Image 1 (tube, rainbow, N blue to C red):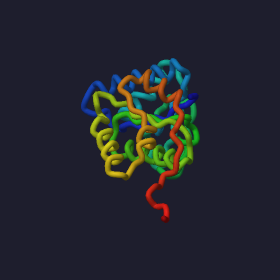
Image 2: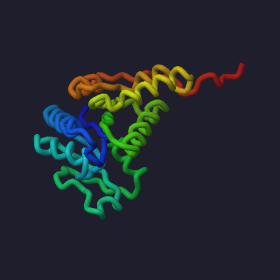
Image 3: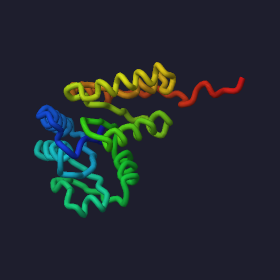
Amino acid sequence: MKSVCVFLGSNPGTSPGYTQAAETLGGLLAARKITLVYGGAKNGLMGILARSVADAGGRVVGVLPGFLKAKELAFEGLAEMFEVESMHERKAKMAELSDGFIAMPGGLGTLEEIFEVATWGQLGLHAKPVGFYNVQGYYDKLAAFLDHMVEQGFLKGPHRNNLIQGDNPAELLDIMAAFKPAVLGKWFGLEKS
């Protein structure tokens, strides 16, 4: 993997552990010469991650809609900035620039972004790894819900298994680098008899 898109909070969250995790991941990305692709903002965990990559000598690429850039939210240490018109274009551009995706703790936007790229993978539109950096158990309940979706017949087990989760960022990156997706059709049970 030469580049990883990270989706994460525009707020720092309530635990200092989230800040620490962003700093750790940023240092790892820089040390491994993996370009960070992210939303381009300077606030919250987004800014902490970008700053940690840049401070460690890594490359940071931001993708920011014009209406957010106009509010002076852009991180100033970017190697490259792509200004787009909409949130839809932002996700498409980040996906185009990235070899994999990670969700760190964040809110609705983080979930919406990671599940959109996960859905694209499920539909065979890309074969890139999708990971959840499970800082302090942040994604434990979401993982249980994904398992529930499999049990209830709304998500195939192999598609569920394509969603990588880990609480150690180095191990998560290693697993993602070796990722080979399960490839199968999305729909089942719709065949005519």
